[in-house]
Image (cartoon, rainbow, N blue to C red; front, side, top):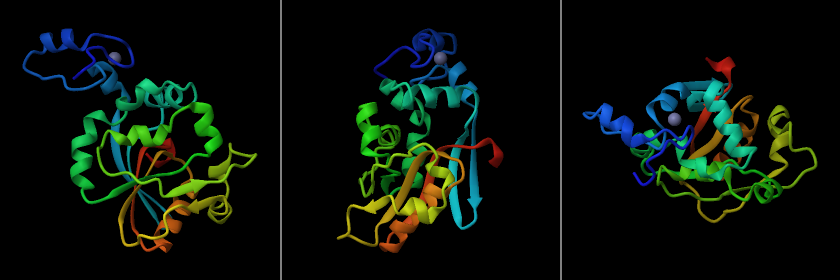
Length: 204
Ligand SMILES: [Zn+2]
């Protein structure tokens, strides 16, 4: 552990570990914040799409995602998946991570690739296989139908097929964007699994 303070509330992680000296605190968040994030993993099925997801998108988790993505707080990137990294790495051994793309315009505005960095803590190979064309109407992408979304996406790597791909994103809401991405990758001959950090409350 390089940082000794909770990335969210700033509480010392060392002091906490001296109270609970038998428990090795190996996290970038304190135990209070980690507990409040309320990890409730789910396997979600939306039509023909299966998604593995870890947190409900509400409360502290939602606040943290907004702070990270919308308020450009890049330093929060390890907070989301740090304690799950080893387990996920084992579960998805042999897979290449493929982030759902944001538009280049959003990446430029933000100055970092939010989803890529969030999942980089898994330390699995990552490939930027999907691209997104800039469009004037970014906001409601997920509420369009998958064929409409697909028109704005493209495959960057066409030469290699037959890879085990883990499609990753921050939140699953309607699943339409994930379906469109999954379809493009599956059509290119890849075996696709889907993992998101959070899921909409309605999937509880
Ligand atoms: Zn904290």
